[in-house]
Image (cartoon, rainbow, N blue to C red; front, side, top):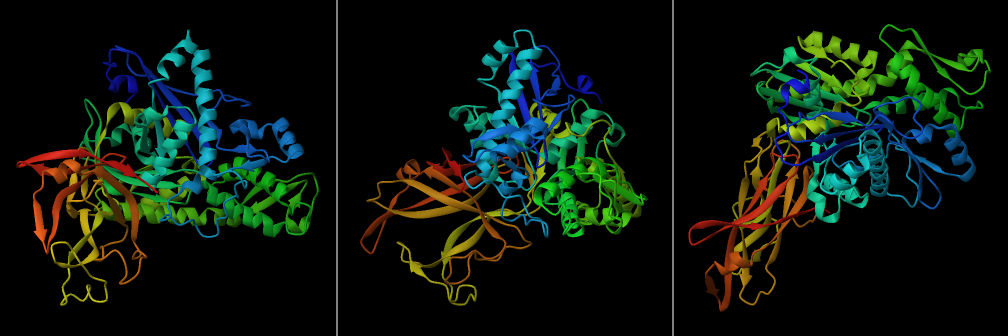
Length: 589
Protein backbone atom coordinates (compact mmCIF):
# COMPACT_ATOMS: atom_id res chain seq x y z
CA UNK A 1 0.00 0.00 0.00
CA UNK A 2 2.33 2.71 -1.25
CA UNK A 3 1.56 6.24 -0.09
CA UNK A 4 1.00 7.52 -3.63
CA UNK A 5 -1.79 4.96 -4.12
CA UNK A 6 -3.52 5.65 -0.82
CA UNK A 7 -3.25 9.37 -0.26
CA UNK A 8 -5.38 11.82 -2.22
CA UNK A 9 -3.87 14.94 -3.82
CA UNK A 10 -3.55 17.89 -1.46
CA UNK A 11 -6.75 19.92 -1.68
CA UNK A 12 -5.49 23.12 -0.08
CA UNK A 13 -5.26 26.34 -2.07
CA UNK A 14 -1.71 27.26 -1.05
CA UNK A 15 1.59 25.56 -0.39
CA UNK A 16 2.34 24.46 3.15
CA UNK A 17 5.32 22.92 4.90
CA UNK A 18 5.09 20.23 7.57
CA UNK A 19 8.17 18.83 9.32
CA UNK A 20 8.36 15.93 11.75
CA UNK A 21 11.15 15.41 14.24
CA UNK A 22 11.67 12.11 16.03
CA UNK A 23 14.21 12.83 18.75
CA UNK A 24 15.09 9.42 20.14
CA UNK A 25 17.20 8.52 23.13
CA UNK A 26 20.04 7.39 20.89
CA UNK A 27 19.20 8.58 17.36
CA UNK A 28 17.15 11.30 15.69
CA UNK A 29 15.38 11.28 12.33
CA UNK A 30 13.61 14.12 10.55
CA UNK A 31 11.20 14.17 7.62
CA UNK A 32 9.25 16.88 5.86
CA UNK A 33 6.41 17.26 3.40
CA UNK A 34 5.96 20.18 1.04
CA UNK A 35 2.22 20.25 0.42
CA UNK A 36 1.39 21.62 -3.02
CA UNK A 37 -2.19 22.05 -4.33
CA UNK A 38 -3.20 19.21 -6.63
CA UNK A 39 -0.14 17.08 -5.86
CA UNK A 40 -0.07 13.85 -3.86
CA UNK A 41 1.86 14.49 -0.63
CA UNK A 42 5.42 13.17 -0.75
CA UNK A 43 7.45 12.46 2.36
CA UNK A 44 11.17 13.25 2.24
CA UNK A 45 13.84 12.43 4.79
CA UNK A 46 16.78 14.60 5.76
CA UNK A 47 19.65 12.49 4.46
CA UNK A 48 22.54 14.94 4.76
CA UNK A 49 23.86 15.80 8.19
CA UNK A 50 27.17 17.60 8.92
CA UNK A 51 30.19 15.26 9.17
CA UNK A 52 28.13 12.21 8.16
CA UNK A 53 30.35 9.71 6.33
CA UNK A 54 27.52 8.33 4.18
CA UNK A 55 23.97 9.69 3.72
CA UNK A 56 21.71 8.34 6.44
CA UNK A 57 18.21 9.14 7.72
CA UNK A 58 19.35 9.04 11.33
CA UNK A 59 21.90 10.95 13.33
CA UNK A 60 23.08 10.38 16.93
CA UNK A 61 21.15 12.29 19.61
CA UNK A 62 24.47 13.37 21.07
CA UNK A 63 26.02 16.78 21.80
CA UNK A 64 29.26 18.22 23.15
CA UNK A 65 29.13 21.16 25.59
CA UNK A 66 32.02 23.34 26.61
CA UNK A 67 32.68 24.34 30.22
CA UNK A 68 30.52 27.47 29.82
CA UNK A 69 27.45 25.43 28.86
CA UNK A 70 27.60 26.29 25.15
CA UNK A 71 26.81 23.52 22.67
CA UNK A 72 29.84 22.91 20.44
CA UNK A 73 29.00 19.84 18.35
CA UNK A 74 25.90 17.88 17.40
CA UNK A 75 24.90 14.55 15.89
CA UNK A 76 27.43 12.98 13.53
CA UNK A 77 29.89 15.76 14.36
CA UNK A 78 30.38 14.14 17.77
CA UNK A 79 31.81 11.02 16.06
CA UNK A 80 34.26 12.96 13.89
CA UNK A 81 37.92 12.51 14.86
CA UNK A 82 38.70 16.23 14.73
CA UNK A 83 35.74 17.01 17.01
CA UNK A 84 36.81 14.32 19.47
CA UNK A 85 40.35 15.81 19.50
CA UNK A 86 38.94 19.29 20.20
CA UNK A 87 36.71 17.90 22.93
CA UNK A 88 39.69 16.29 24.66
CA UNK A 89 41.83 19.39 24.24
CA UNK A 90 39.26 21.86 25.58
CA UNK A 91 37.50 19.67 28.12
CA UNK A 92 34.16 19.50 26.33
CA UNK A 93 31.56 17.25 27.91
CA UNK A 94 29.74 14.62 25.86
CA UNK A 95 25.98 14.49 26.50
CA UNK A 96 23.90 11.45 25.53
CA UNK A 97 20.72 9.66 26.65
CA UNK A 98 19.57 13.10 27.85
CA UNK A 99 16.01 12.53 26.60
CA UNK A 100 15.39 10.18 29.53
CA UNK A 101 15.80 13.12 31.93
CA UNK A 102 12.44 14.36 30.61
CA UNK A 103 10.64 11.17 31.64
CA UNK A 104 7.58 11.39 33.92
CA UNK A 105 8.14 10.50 37.57
CA UNK A 106 5.72 7.57 37.35
CA UNK A 107 7.98 5.78 34.85
CA UNK A 108 10.60 4.03 36.99
CA UNK A 109 14.06 3.69 35.51
CA UNK A 110 15.09 0.10 34.84
CA UNK A 111 17.12 -1.51 37.60
CA UNK A 112 20.78 -0.54 37.75
CA UNK A 113 20.59 2.01 34.91
CA UNK A 114 22.86 4.97 35.56
CA UNK A 115 22.14 7.90 33.25
CA UNK A 116 25.25 9.82 32.17
CA UNK A 117 25.20 13.03 34.24
CA UNK A 118 24.44 16.36 32.57
CA UNK A 119 26.94 19.22 32.76
CA UNK A 120 26.46 21.29 35.91
CA UNK A 121 25.06 24.35 34.13
CA UNK A 122 23.01 22.56 31.45
CA UNK A 123 19.42 21.31 31.83
CA UNK A 124 17.55 18.74 29.76
CA UNK A 125 15.29 21.57 28.50
CA UNK A 126 18.30 23.54 27.26
CA UNK A 127 19.68 20.45 25.51
CA UNK A 128 16.33 19.88 23.82
CA UNK A 129 16.29 23.51 22.65
CA UNK A 130 19.86 23.38 21.35
CA UNK A 131 19.26 20.10 19.55
CA UNK A 132 15.99 21.25 17.95
CA UNK A 133 17.76 24.42 16.76
CA UNK A 134 20.42 22.22 15.16
CA UNK A 135 17.74 20.09 13.48
CA UNK A 136 15.92 23.21 12.24
CA UNK A 137 19.15 24.49 10.67
CA UNK A 138 19.67 21.18 8.87
CA UNK A 139 16.10 21.11 7.52
CA UNK A 140 16.53 24.66 6.28
CA UNK A 141 19.86 23.79 4.63
CA UNK A 142 18.43 20.63 3.04
CA UNK A 143 15.37 22.34 1.56
CA UNK A 144 17.41 25.36 0.45
CA UNK A 145 19.93 23.22 -1.43
CA UNK A 146 17.54 20.56 -2.77
CA UNK A 147 14.74 22.66 -4.29
CA UNK A 148 14.96 25.38 -6.90
CA UNK A 149 14.43 28.63 -5.01
CA UNK A 150 14.64 26.48 -1.87
CA UNK A 151 15.79 29.42 0.22
CA UNK A 152 12.68 31.38 -0.73
CA UNK A 153 10.49 28.34 -0.01
CA UNK A 154 11.91 28.08 3.51
CA UNK A 155 11.74 31.81 4.21
CA UNK A 156 8.10 31.93 3.11
CA UNK A 157 6.65 28.65 4.40
CA UNK A 158 8.62 28.23 7.65
CA UNK A 159 6.65 31.15 9.12
CA UNK A 160 3.45 29.07 9.13
CA UNK A 161 4.75 25.50 9.10
CA UNK A 162 3.51 22.76 11.40
CA UNK A 163 6.07 20.92 13.52
CA UNK A 164 5.20 17.38 14.58
CA UNK A 165 7.20 16.08 17.54
CA UNK A 166 7.07 12.44 18.58
CA UNK A 167 6.89 11.26 22.16
CA UNK A 168 6.99 7.89 23.91
CA UNK A 169 3.58 6.56 24.99
CA UNK A 170 4.34 7.42 28.60
CA UNK A 171 5.08 11.11 28.03
CA UNK A 172 2.18 13.35 29.12
CA UNK A 173 1.13 16.99 29.06
CA UNK A 174 3.99 18.17 31.24
CA UNK A 175 6.58 16.66 28.89
CA UNK A 176 4.72 17.96 25.82
CA UNK A 177 4.64 21.43 27.35
CA UNK A 178 8.41 21.39 27.88
CA UNK A 179 8.99 20.11 24.35
CA UNK A 180 6.73 22.81 22.88
CA UNK A 181 8.62 25.50 24.76
CA UNK A 182 11.91 24.05 23.49
CA UNK A 183 10.57 24.23 19.92
CA UNK A 184 9.64 27.88 20.47
CA UNK A 185 13.02 28.69 22.00
CA UNK A 186 14.74 26.93 19.10
CA UNK A 187 12.93 29.15 16.59
CA UNK A 188 10.92 26.39 14.92
CA UNK A 189 7.82 28.48 15.63
CA UNK A 190 7.36 31.83 17.31
CA UNK A 191 5.67 32.31 20.67
CA UNK A 192 2.28 32.88 19.01
CA UNK A 193 2.70 29.76 16.87
CA UNK A 194 2.91 27.29 19.76
CA UNK A 195 -0.30 25.55 18.67
CA UNK A 196 1.43 24.64 15.40
CA UNK A 197 3.63 22.29 17.42
CA UNK A 198 1.72 19.02 17.62
CA UNK A 199 2.51 15.70 19.28
CA UNK A 200 2.04 12.09 18.25
CA UNK A 201 3.13 9.00 20.13
CA UNK A 202 5.95 7.02 18.60
CA UNK A 203 3.82 3.87 18.54
CA UNK A 204 1.00 5.57 16.65
CA UNK A 205 3.40 7.07 14.13
CA UNK A 206 5.10 3.69 13.73
CA UNK A 207 1.88 1.78 12.96
CA UNK A 208 1.01 4.34 10.29
CA UNK A 209 4.49 3.97 8.78
CA UNK A 210 4.03 0.19 8.75
CA UNK A 211 0.75 0.62 6.89
CA UNK A 212 2.38 2.98 4.38
CA UNK A 213 5.34 0.65 3.82
CA UNK A 214 3.16 -2.02 2.23
CA UNK A 215 4.98 -4.83 4.02
CA UNK A 216 2.04 -5.57 6.37
CA UNK A 217 -0.67 -4.99 3.79
CA UNK A 218 -2.06 -8.51 4.18
CA UNK A 219 -2.48 -7.81 7.92
CA UNK A 220 -4.62 -4.73 7.31
CA UNK A 221 -8.00 -6.41 7.26
CA UNK A 222 -11.19 -4.65 8.26
CA UNK A 223 -12.22 -5.58 11.84
CA UNK A 224 -8.79 -7.15 12.36
CA UNK A 225 -6.65 -6.50 15.44
CA UNK A 226 -2.90 -6.07 15.85
CA UNK A 227 -0.32 -4.91 18.39
CA UNK A 228 2.37 -2.36 17.55
CA UNK A 229 5.62 -2.67 19.52
CA UNK A 230 8.17 0.09 19.00
CA UNK A 231 11.48 -0.97 20.53
CA UNK A 232 13.48 2.25 20.58
CA UNK A 233 16.69 3.44 22.13
CA UNK A 234 15.29 4.36 25.54
CA UNK A 235 11.64 3.31 25.60
CA UNK A 236 9.49 0.45 24.38
CA UNK A 237 5.99 1.55 23.36
CA UNK A 238 3.19 -0.99 22.96
CA UNK A 239 -0.35 -0.30 21.73
CA UNK A 240 -3.18 -2.46 20.45
CA UNK A 241 -5.27 -1.40 17.42
CA UNK A 242 -8.50 -2.45 15.78
CA UNK A 243 -8.74 -1.81 12.03
CA UNK A 244 -12.09 -0.12 11.34
CA UNK A 245 -11.50 0.54 7.65
CA UNK A 246 -8.78 0.04 5.06
CA UNK A 247 -10.14 1.83 1.98
CA UNK A 248 -10.46 4.52 0.83
CA UNK A 249 -8.53 5.57 3.94
CA UNK A 250 -7.03 3.63 6.84
CA UNK A 251 -9.03 4.10 10.06
CA UNK A 252 -7.84 2.65 13.37
CA UNK A 253 -8.89 2.71 16.99
CA UNK A 254 -6.97 1.68 20.05
CA UNK A 255 -8.11 -1.66 21.43
CA UNK A 256 -5.80 -1.64 24.43
CA UNK A 257 -4.33 1.28 26.32
CA UNK A 258 -0.93 2.42 25.12
CA UNK A 259 1.90 1.50 27.46
CA UNK A 260 5.47 2.70 27.84
CA UNK A 261 8.45 0.88 29.33
CA UNK A 262 11.96 2.12 29.96
CA UNK A 263 13.52 -0.93 28.36
CA UNK A 264 15.11 0.19 25.09
CA UNK A 265 18.50 -0.42 23.53
CA UNK A 266 20.40 1.73 26.02
CA UNK A 267 19.64 -0.81 28.72
CA UNK A 268 21.42 -3.49 26.69
CA UNK A 269 24.39 -1.15 26.45
CA UNK A 270 24.23 -0.38 30.17
CA UNK A 271 24.33 -4.09 31.07
CA UNK A 272 27.30 -4.54 28.75
CA UNK A 273 29.11 -1.56 30.29
CA UNK A 274 28.71 -3.04 33.78
CA UNK A 275 30.23 -6.29 32.49
CA UNK A 276 33.15 -4.53 30.78
CA UNK A 277 33.90 -2.51 33.90
CA UNK A 278 34.07 -5.62 36.07
CA UNK A 279 35.85 -7.82 33.53
CA UNK A 280 38.54 -5.25 32.75
CA UNK A 281 39.08 -4.03 36.31
CA UNK A 282 42.76 -3.34 37.00
CA UNK A 283 43.73 -3.30 33.32
CA UNK A 284 44.73 -0.37 31.09
CA UNK A 285 41.09 -0.17 29.96
CA UNK A 286 39.80 0.41 33.47
CA UNK A 287 38.90 4.09 32.93
CA UNK A 288 35.84 5.96 31.70
CA UNK A 289 37.30 7.05 28.34
CA UNK A 290 38.30 3.51 27.39
CA UNK A 291 34.97 2.09 28.55
CA UNK A 292 33.09 4.63 26.41
CA UNK A 293 35.13 3.68 23.32
CA UNK A 294 34.57 -0.03 24.00
CA UNK A 295 30.87 0.57 24.41
CA UNK A 296 30.83 2.52 21.13
CA UNK A 297 32.30 -0.47 19.28
CA UNK A 298 29.95 -2.85 21.08
CA UNK A 299 26.89 -0.78 20.09
CA UNK A 300 27.80 -0.65 16.43
CA UNK A 301 29.07 -4.18 15.94
CA UNK A 302 28.54 -6.98 18.47
CA UNK A 303 25.10 -5.76 19.62
CA UNK A 304 23.83 -5.44 16.06
CA UNK A 305 25.29 -8.72 14.78
CA UNK A 306 24.57 -11.08 17.65
CA UNK A 307 22.07 -13.77 16.75
CA UNK A 308 20.60 -16.69 18.65
CA UNK A 309 22.97 -19.66 18.46
CA UNK A 310 26.14 -17.55 18.19
CA UNK A 311 28.72 -18.96 20.57
CA UNK A 312 30.95 -15.89 20.60
CA UNK A 313 31.17 -12.20 19.70
CA UNK A 314 34.14 -9.87 19.62
CA UNK A 315 34.54 -6.30 20.84
CA UNK A 316 37.41 -4.03 19.79
CA UNK A 317 39.60 -2.65 22.59
CA UNK A 318 42.35 -0.05 22.27
CA UNK A 319 45.72 -1.43 21.10
CA UNK A 320 46.77 -4.95 20.14
CA UNK A 321 47.57 -6.53 23.52
CA UNK A 322 46.66 -10.13 24.31
CA UNK A 323 45.67 -11.33 27.81
CA UNK A 324 44.71 -15.00 27.67
CA UNK A 325 43.06 -15.14 31.09
CA UNK A 326 40.70 -12.30 30.10
CA UNK A 327 39.96 -13.72 26.63
CA UNK A 328 41.67 -10.76 24.96
CA UNK A 329 43.56 -11.51 21.76
CA UNK A 330 45.25 -8.82 19.64
CA UNK A 331 43.14 -6.08 21.19
CA UNK A 332 39.81 -7.88 20.86
CA UNK A 333 37.70 -9.14 23.76
CA UNK A 334 35.86 -12.41 23.17
CA UNK A 335 32.34 -12.50 24.65
CA UNK A 336 30.54 -15.81 25.06
CA UNK A 337 27.04 -16.35 23.75
CA UNK A 338 25.74 -16.61 27.32
CA UNK A 339 27.30 -13.25 28.23
CA UNK A 340 25.73 -11.61 25.18
CA UNK A 341 22.35 -13.09 26.05
CA UNK A 342 22.59 -11.70 29.58
CA UNK A 343 22.87 -8.16 28.22
CA UNK A 344 19.52 -8.52 26.44
CA UNK A 345 17.76 -10.34 29.27
CA UNK A 346 16.24 -7.36 31.12
CA UNK A 347 14.76 -5.53 28.10
CA UNK A 348 13.51 -8.77 26.51
CA UNK A 349 11.71 -9.78 29.68
CA UNK A 350 10.07 -6.34 29.92
CA UNK A 351 9.01 -6.40 26.24
CA UNK A 352 7.46 -9.85 26.55
CA UNK A 353 5.60 -8.92 29.74
CA UNK A 354 4.39 -5.71 28.10
CA UNK A 355 3.08 -7.60 25.08
CA UNK A 356 1.24 -10.08 27.29
CA UNK A 357 -0.40 -7.21 29.20
CA UNK A 358 -1.43 -5.58 25.91
CA UNK A 359 -3.09 -8.81 24.77
CA UNK A 360 -4.82 -9.28 28.10
CA UNK A 361 -6.13 -5.71 28.15
CA UNK A 362 -7.31 -6.09 24.57
CA UNK A 363 -9.14 -9.34 25.32
CA UNK A 364 -6.63 -11.32 23.20
CA UNK A 365 -8.42 -10.25 20.04
CA UNK A 366 -5.13 -9.52 18.28
CA UNK A 367 -2.99 -12.29 16.88
CA UNK A 368 -0.30 -10.19 15.20
CA UNK A 369 2.59 -8.06 16.46
CA UNK A 370 4.38 -5.48 14.32
CA UNK A 371 7.90 -4.69 15.53
CA UNK A 372 9.71 -1.48 14.67
CA UNK A 373 12.60 0.45 16.18
CA UNK A 374 16.33 0.00 16.46
CA UNK A 375 16.27 -2.73 19.11
CA UNK A 376 13.79 -4.75 17.02
CA UNK A 377 16.36 -4.87 14.21
CA UNK A 378 18.62 -6.97 16.44
CA UNK A 379 18.63 -10.57 15.06
CA UNK A 380 18.67 -11.92 18.60
CA UNK A 381 15.76 -9.80 19.85
CA UNK A 382 13.70 -10.52 16.75
CA UNK A 383 14.24 -14.28 16.91
CA UNK A 384 13.38 -14.35 20.61
CA UNK A 385 10.16 -12.41 20.07
CA UNK A 386 9.22 -14.61 17.10
CA UNK A 387 9.73 -17.68 19.30
CA UNK A 388 7.67 -16.04 22.05
CA UNK A 389 4.90 -15.39 19.52
CA UNK A 390 4.95 -18.97 18.25
CA UNK A 391 4.45 -20.23 21.80
CA UNK A 392 1.29 -18.11 22.07
CA UNK A 393 0.06 -18.57 18.51
CA UNK A 394 0.91 -14.97 17.59
CA UNK A 395 2.55 -13.82 14.35
CA UNK A 396 5.46 -11.40 14.78
CA UNK A 397 6.73 -9.33 11.86
CA UNK A 398 9.04 -6.42 11.05
CA UNK A 399 8.22 -4.05 8.15
CA UNK A 400 10.67 -4.24 5.27
CA UNK A 401 13.14 -1.43 4.75
CA UNK A 402 14.94 0.81 7.23
CA UNK A 403 12.96 1.35 10.40
CA UNK A 404 15.00 4.40 11.42
CA UNK A 405 12.65 6.66 9.47
CA UNK A 406 9.51 4.79 10.57
CA UNK A 407 8.43 7.20 13.27
CA UNK A 408 9.40 10.43 11.46
CA UNK A 409 7.47 9.46 8.31
CA UNK A 410 4.60 8.01 10.33
CA UNK A 411 4.29 11.33 12.17
CA UNK A 412 3.66 13.07 8.85
CA UNK A 413 1.04 10.44 7.97
CA UNK A 414 -0.64 11.04 11.34
CA UNK A 415 -0.84 14.78 10.71
CA UNK A 416 -2.23 14.42 7.17
CA UNK A 417 -4.56 11.43 7.53
CA UNK A 418 -6.07 11.53 11.06
CA UNK A 419 -6.26 7.74 10.88
CA UNK A 420 -6.75 7.01 14.60
CA UNK A 421 -10.22 8.06 15.77
CA UNK A 422 -10.51 6.29 19.13
CA UNK A 423 -8.00 5.88 21.93
CA UNK A 424 -8.14 4.10 25.29
CA UNK A 425 -7.76 5.92 28.60
CA UNK A 426 -4.51 4.76 30.19
CA UNK A 427 -5.50 5.91 33.68
CA UNK A 428 -8.40 7.27 35.72
CA UNK A 429 -8.76 11.05 35.37
CA UNK A 430 -10.66 13.30 37.76
CA UNK A 431 -10.72 16.20 40.19
CA UNK A 432 -10.92 16.72 43.95
CA UNK A 433 -14.21 18.04 45.34
CA UNK A 434 -15.74 18.76 48.74
CA UNK A 435 -18.55 16.54 50.05
CA UNK A 436 -20.86 16.81 53.09
CA UNK A 437 -19.31 15.27 56.19
CA UNK A 438 -20.86 11.98 57.33
CA UNK A 439 -20.01 10.69 60.78
CA UNK A 440 -21.16 7.22 59.68
CA UNK A 441 -18.58 7.06 56.89
CA UNK A 442 -15.27 5.63 58.18
CA UNK A 443 -13.43 7.37 55.32
CA UNK A 444 -14.56 10.74 56.74
CA UNK A 445 -13.30 10.13 60.25
CA UNK A 446 -10.04 11.76 61.28
CA UNK A 447 -10.30 14.22 58.39
CA UNK A 448 -10.50 17.96 59.09
CA UNK A 449 -13.91 19.47 58.44
CA UNK A 450 -15.01 23.00 57.62
CA UNK A 451 -18.29 24.88 57.35
CA UNK A 452 -19.07 26.20 53.87
CA UNK A 453 -20.98 29.43 53.32
CA UNK A 454 -24.25 27.47 53.05
CA UNK A 455 -23.75 26.19 56.60
CA UNK A 456 -22.93 22.61 55.58
CA UNK A 457 -20.12 20.75 57.36
CA UNK A 458 -17.81 19.38 54.65
CA UNK A 459 -14.63 17.46 54.00
CA UNK A 460 -12.42 18.26 51.04
CA UNK A 461 -10.27 16.17 48.72
CA UNK A 462 -12.91 13.63 47.63
CA UNK A 463 -12.28 11.97 44.25
CA UNK A 464 -14.68 12.88 41.42
CA UNK A 465 -14.12 10.86 38.27
CA UNK A 466 -14.14 12.41 34.79
CA UNK A 467 -12.83 9.45 32.79
CA UNK A 468 -12.31 5.87 33.92
CA UNK A 469 -9.32 3.74 33.06
CA UNK A 470 -9.70 1.72 29.81
CA UNK A 471 -12.68 3.86 28.74
CA UNK A 472 -12.92 4.54 25.00
CA UNK A 473 -11.97 8.09 24.08
CA UNK A 474 -13.37 9.27 20.78
CA UNK A 475 -11.28 12.07 19.33
CA UNK A 476 -14.01 14.69 19.57
CA UNK A 477 -15.84 13.40 22.66
CA UNK A 478 -15.85 15.67 25.70
CA UNK A 479 -15.93 14.33 29.27
CA UNK A 480 -17.03 16.43 32.23
CA UNK A 481 -17.46 16.49 35.99
CA UNK A 482 -19.66 18.92 37.99
CA UNK A 483 -17.97 21.42 40.23
CA UNK A 484 -19.19 24.28 42.36
CA UNK A 485 -17.54 26.99 44.38
CA UNK A 486 -18.99 29.59 46.71
CA UNK A 487 -18.06 33.18 45.96
CA UNK A 488 -18.93 36.12 48.20
CA UNK A 489 -20.38 39.27 46.64
CA UNK A 490 -17.21 41.19 47.55
CA UNK A 491 -15.09 38.99 45.28
CA UNK A 492 -13.09 40.94 42.68
CA UNK A 493 -11.05 38.22 40.96
CA UNK A 494 -13.07 35.53 39.20
CA UNK A 495 -10.20 33.49 37.78
CA UNK A 496 -10.52 30.00 39.25
CA UNK A 497 -8.18 27.02 38.97
CA UNK A 498 -9.12 23.35 39.18
CA UNK A 499 -6.42 20.69 39.48
CA UNK A 500 -6.85 17.55 37.35
CA UNK A 501 -5.41 14.31 38.73
CA UNK A 502 -4.57 10.91 37.27
CA UNK A 503 -4.89 7.69 39.22
CA UNK A 504 -2.53 5.11 37.74
CA UNK A 505 -3.61 1.96 39.58
CA UNK A 506 -6.68 -0.25 39.38
CA UNK A 507 -9.42 1.41 41.44
CA UNK A 508 -9.21 4.96 42.87
CA UNK A 509 -9.59 5.34 46.66
CA UNK A 510 -12.38 7.77 47.65
CA UNK A 511 -9.96 10.44 48.92
CA UNK A 512 -6.81 11.70 47.24
CA UNK A 513 -4.86 12.31 50.43
CA UNK A 514 -4.30 10.59 53.74
CA UNK A 515 -6.28 12.01 56.70
CA UNK A 516 -4.66 15.16 58.04
CA UNK A 517 -1.77 15.01 55.53
CA UNK A 518 -0.92 16.81 52.32
CA UNK A 519 0.75 13.83 50.63
CA UNK A 520 -1.15 12.11 47.83
CA UNK A 521 -2.20 8.50 48.22
CA UNK A 522 0.16 6.33 46.11
CA UNK A 523 -1.20 6.07 42.59
CA UNK A 524 -2.51 9.63 42.46
CA UNK A 525 -0.53 12.25 40.51
CA UNK A 526 -1.21 15.85 39.53
CA UNK A 527 -1.77 15.84 35.78
CA UNK A 528 -2.41 19.53 35.10
CA UNK A 529 -4.50 22.48 36.20
CA UNK A 530 -7.38 24.07 34.31
CA UNK A 531 -7.87 27.79 34.85
CA UNK A 532 -10.73 29.99 33.60
CA UNK A 533 -12.39 33.34 34.23
CA UNK A 534 -15.82 32.61 35.77
CA UNK A 535 -17.07 36.20 35.81
CA UNK A 536 -19.88 35.45 33.32
CA UNK A 537 -20.80 32.31 35.23
CA UNK A 538 -20.90 34.34 38.47
CA UNK A 539 -23.08 37.01 36.89
CA UNK A 540 -25.56 34.36 35.68
CA UNK A 541 -26.00 32.95 39.20
CA UNK A 542 -28.46 34.18 41.84
CA UNK A 543 -27.34 35.44 45.22
CA UNK A 544 -27.97 33.61 48.49
CA UNK A 545 -27.80 34.96 52.02
CA UNK A 546 -26.99 32.62 54.91
CA UNK A 547 -26.23 33.88 58.43
CA UNK A 548 -25.92 37.39 57.04
CA UNK A 549 -23.35 36.45 54.41
CA UNK A 550 -24.30 37.24 50.78
CA UNK A 551 -22.74 34.89 48.23
CA UNK A 552 -23.32 32.86 45.12
CA UNK A 553 -22.90 29.13 44.58
CA UNK A 554 -21.27 29.12 41.16
CA UNK A 555 -21.92 25.78 39.45
CA UNK A 556 -19.97 24.74 36.37
CA UNK A 557 -18.43 21.70 34.76
CA UNK A 558 -14.79 20.94 34.05
CA UNK A 559 -14.77 19.55 30.50
CA UNK A 560 -11.83 17.56 29.14
CA UNK A 561 -11.14 16.20 25.67
CA UNK A 562 -8.69 13.32 26.00
CA UNK A 563 -9.09 11.52 22.66
CA UNK A 564 -6.41 13.59 20.97
CA UNK A 565 -2.73 13.21 21.75
CA UNK A 566 -2.97 16.42 23.84
CA UNK A 567 -5.45 17.35 26.55
CA UNK A 568 -7.79 20.25 25.85
CA UNK A 569 -10.12 21.76 28.43
CA UNK A 570 -12.86 24.32 28.92
CA UNK A 571 -15.49 25.31 31.48
CA UNK A 572 -19.24 24.94 30.90
CA UNK A 573 -22.17 26.46 32.76
CA UNK A 574 -25.77 27.44 32.11
CA UNK A 575 -27.27 30.83 31.36
CA UNK A 576 -31.04 31.06 30.89
CA UNK A 577 -31.23 27.29 30.50
CA UNK A 578 -28.61 27.21 27.74
CA UNK A 579 -25.10 25.71 27.90
CA UNK A 580 -22.41 28.37 27.73
CA UNK A 581 -18.71 27.66 27.31
CA UNK A 582 -15.77 29.67 28.54
CA UNK A 583 -12.17 29.26 27.40
CA UNK A 584 -9.77 27.65 29.80
CA UNK A 585 -6.03 27.40 30.05
CA UNK A 586 -4.32 24.08 30.70
CA UNK A 587 -1.15 24.54 32.73
CA UNK A 588 1.58 22.22 34.01
CA UNK A 589 4.05 22.53 36.84
